Image (cartoon, rainbow, N blue to C red):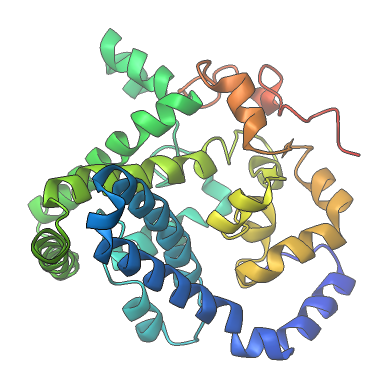
Length: 329
């Protein structure tokens, strides 16, 4: 459901939606060609690049592909859910079936429950009971996960473990609805891994562990502290004025509040929508503004950005304000 700043913005976006670029979605089609073409070009030239460079490039392209999957599930570039699913089915980033990701992410867009453990599937908080039951080692890991380095190194492992536990839990409870999606994904992954190993000389384990985990790790930079605990729903979501490389890699999803307010706006228009109403969005976010991922790195590379337990030391973020809290001009 769209949330507009005012009627002027609503009318402006309606005019943009009627434009040739929005109707054809040609930037997204070009993006699809670039990602698929780049990924398979790197794979087929693996022997020339060498395995270390190939793995690094496939991890970066896998992250870009995950950003594309995010765009697809929000209804771009076509209005057909089936066609978009076909475009996002290939396991280029290894780990998660597109349909499972789609359902989980759309659930995350229920902004009333953002950050709430058990209700927001993308929350990095735990409830007080989980914290009390956790041993010292797990508490240390949870704190480490709330550093930027920890989010990149340990965050994907937490996500994969939670996904596996959820999938097995559903089957154990007699819910088999997700099984076909998992079987199709695993079959495609097995076929792709076999082709990479036999035709391209890329070991299957290196693709799965190196490129696959690497994709999740790099994607964790974007999701690092993109939501905070706050009374006002709009204050929970960040605006990150990232540099061009990160904006392209994450398809402008760094303007995360704009995306949550207007999920129907395609990636190539998010920056313009934000810049047109920059000050209004900064105020709407409760000044949850960050001027690039470098600010997160400088302040929270090895320091937890917030306590892992929701509402502990995070009341409107008095203890951990955004780095750019006082520099909104």
